Image (cartoon, rainbow over all chains, first blue to last red; front, side):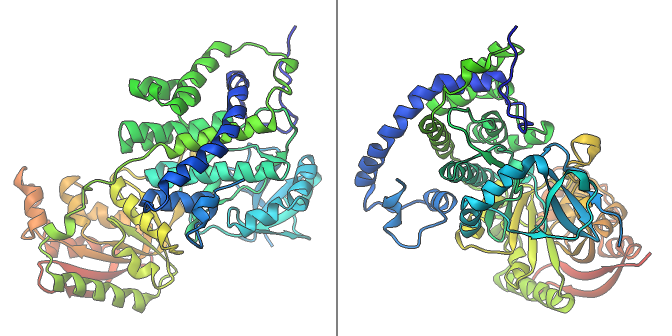
Length: 79
Length: 463
């Protein structure tokens, strides 16, 4: 008999089996996506250069990186 | 010294719990959580979280008696949060910010060898102009290969309501009030328009996610089938994909219900400035510790208090007006303003287990001062609430009240009455004063120059 023993002793949320399975299904794709994204960001950043950021971009910048202290930080992104 | 008392809502997580001792809030860290707590503190994660302003700071304390000392590893005293707000009271932009912060927390944790085990929207609060995690015990040691245990919760608490708001209606945020653990994904999937299936993020994280859940519901899966299958890189990819999905959701803040309000009133420039000056005078006179601005629109008058360093919650029924208030507060890093969506004719009730997990609005008061500016006519005439009932409500909510009476001769009230029978015989200045005098002492009364309106400063009568 199969028993679900996925949960670590402390995990108290019901993560739902399906939610695990879909992560597994997505896993391969998402790993590859991370690789692509690094280059993609550079391409996007290149084309966006010079364009003023909108209000939403400004908020995102704050939410994701704590806000920009100087104009160049938007290109740093991460990695 | 009183007996330590457990915080009612703190019972789900076996890692620890919140409790009060002499009206101070503490958190017990249980022995079961010891390795995770030590990792949090030693790995540099705690320091990074505090430096980036992403979590409330805490101090370890000793000699505090706890309700369950046998389980205790440590007792910590977290920084106090002045007002706990709930996701169903947040505007779209607030929920979106909280979602991005949650993903940032998850990434930061992974960089320190830990994983965010909870992605509950209730664990975030807008404090001093920034979003902070308030549950210190949300991290556990990450073991490569394991899936993200909070993935479902993130989708239910953030992605589903955001997608519904962005693609259907902003008011659907209220659905979070119906489902205490976020909107079930099968419900979200059924309600979302077909075109959201063309959005890769929503297609996978909501539609396919819901389908997979249904397919595997009640089925048993062996550990080996899942274990070790999700590399750290894939997990980062998952967080990234969620981030892009959230960032792809947006709403335009179009003309709000109140957008042109200040033009359509019979305010002149002078009246507007005089009204501000009067309110400032009342605030300076009372010097309240906190203010609730009930019916705040975009926070114009709330800022009279918050700009003076007084913590102010700005409530309005219009999600667009609250979005405007929030965006300005966030951009300008205003530290004393918390804008929230609230329908005062049906304010947030007590919810969850025994109605006590999430507090009602009244239970979160009373506040030292409330503003009710250009509000009474909406409640009394549009919602038919008799004036004595209004007075009763305000007396339960606050100690001091700055309230504006808007008479029938005012253009706004005329507009409300234009399409209905005037059944409001006692809606006069005298009727208003008589009703409020049963609960309040009128400290000051001043006409707003160049308008038909009157401003009052009142104090609740001691019973």
